Each structure stands twice: as C-alpha cells, then as structure tokens.
Image 1 (spheres, rainbow, N blue to C red):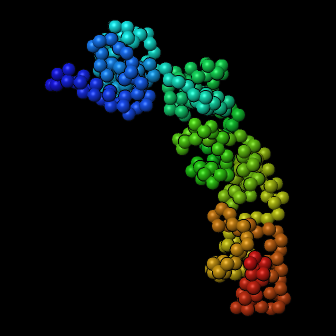
Image 2 (image 1 turned 45 degrees about the horizontal axis):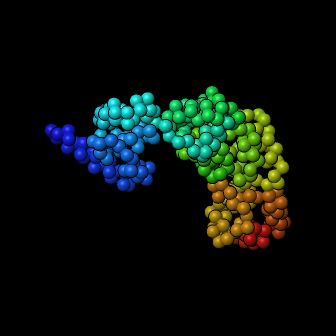
Image 3 (image 1 turned 60 degrees about the vertical axis):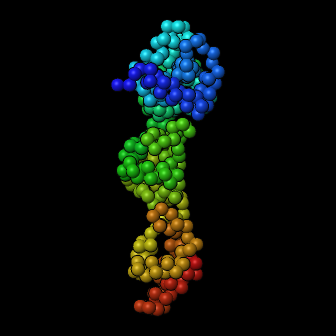
Length: 306
C-alpha cells in the first residue's frame, strides 16, 4: 500500500495541473496561506466555495471521503469556515430568464430541475430570488402535449414528433429546455394554426379529429382553400389512366409548376380539376381511344401544368 504522504503528493500534483489549466482556479496559486500548506490546500480553499465535494473528488480523482479528510485540517485551522456552504454557484441572468420562462409555462420546480439538469435546491433558490411560485407539474397555458395531440388526431406519438420536426408545430420551449428528452406542449391556438396550414393536410384527415371544435375548423379551412392535395395515383384514377403512365409523365417534367407537399402529394386547385374534366369531355367528344386518347390527355396536361 502506498504511504499517505505519497498519495498527498500525487494529489497535490493533480491540483497544480488543475490550477494551471482550469481558468476558474488559476488565481488559487496566489492565495496566501499559513506555513505548512501546499498547492492542494490552495486548490481546496479556492474550489470549496464554488463547487460540490463530489465535483472536487472527480477533479482530483479521489473519493469524497478523501476530500473531506483533506478539508478537515483546513476547517480546524479556520482557513475554511465550518459553516461555509459547499455549493454556492453564481446564477446568471440567462439562468434566471430560463427558469422564469418555465415557471410561466406552469412547470413545477422539480420538473424545471430535471429540464435544466441542476439540483432542486438551486431552482428553489432562483425562484425565491425572483419571488415567483411554481406548483403544477405540467403547463397550464399549453395543456396539449405530444400524447394528447396524438390522441386528438388518432395518430402515433412518433407521427407528432415528425410533424414537429417539419416545423408544422411550434417549439414553445425556452432555449435552455430545447432538448429531445423534453416534451413539447401546445395550446388550442397552435392546433388551430396547424389545421389551417395546408402543408399539413396530406398527413391527416379531419374525420379522425376527436375534438368537435377543431374538426369543424379543419373542415371549414379545407372547404375555403380552393383546392386539395392529391397523390399521383388519385390523379391517374381521376383521369382514367394507369398510374404507371402518369408516373412516367411526371418523371419527364409534368406537374413541375405544381406545389409539392407532404409525401410527394400535389396541390390541385378546383380549377385544375375542372380543366381535367374538360379534357375528358373533349376526348369523349372526339371519340378518342387508346394511344390517341393518351396523347391528347398528355398534351392537355402539359399545357395546363407544364
């Protein structure tokens, strides 16, 4: 077993390395201490008020019990006050703003501590300084989470996360809480804006929305839009041609001027549908069949959609 003096010499060398590389403790080498104190003592005096004993142990590569053993003589000689707090970190304005924003959304202190990855005591201290109260465990102003929205639209939670990743649902989390592990919450105004955004319409159906008010808003928005999202198979079925033919036409540049949306759907206006119906009527009036009919429809679509 290595003698205690050699262990302390090794830890003192580690303390000198930390003071030379960590800007938080560079001033520790200039701390005046009584005779008999070494660089390990200087490091402990500088670090003890600002980081935890656990962090001290991690920095030195020793156990917490060993740190307490090194601190005991400093406390006995009055160099470190016995009543000094072990952890008294400086709270920045950004931390206060983040905590205030989370409290405004209705998160509890415990949830805020989990979001920010700090101790509950620190959050309590910040909220006491700000004079605010956090009680609930979920946001009151934004009551719809990922699970609730998934149930409302009759889809899975991963689907909601994909919609969120596409930017269809806003990120209301404060900057300090924008991590994948932290769930999102939305209010009814956000969901109304979602169902009115025609980019999202191909991903869901109004008939599956369980909330009657939101379903009525979604149906009205689609009626007033003047068009609908259609995939190429639906367009081919409407024109009475094979999907393979329409796919080949699309590959050659057909529908280049059409707006393309979710899952390669195309935005087809009511005027476009009426024009397609006129194409079919003209083809029937001229008695076109087989290849001639296909050529006529292809040429008509080119003129309409590019």
